[in-house]
Amino acid sequence: MIIGSCSLKVIIYESNSLKDKRQVIKSIMGRLQSRFNISIAEVGLNDSWQSSIIGFVCVTNDVNHANEILSNVIKFIDDDGRVEIVEHEIEIL
Image (cartoon, rainbow, N blue to C red; front, side, top):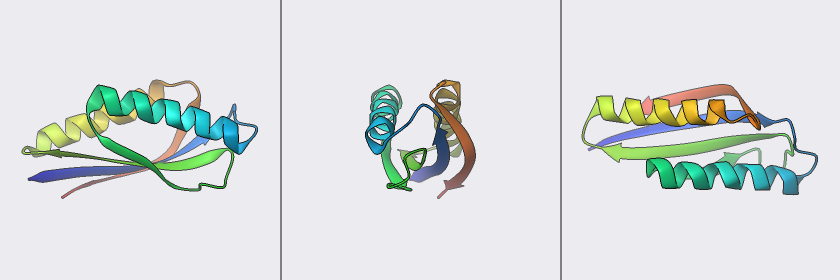
């Protein structure tokens, strides 16, 4: 069993309140969960209204497949104009 995990720090430029932030993050997380079949959650900076840390994982039987899924998710988030990825950390277990 191979577990691929990633944490992303993102900045939400359009956010003027925690409500705006939650709406953007929830929308992105829902789209990712249904498209890539991953487990995802906001794992940090919960009280900051313009930044967030999002964590997601995938479980597979192949290291290359785990890397491919994580890369595709990062690219999908990077292509979303509402957020900017500031840093990311990938770990394969």
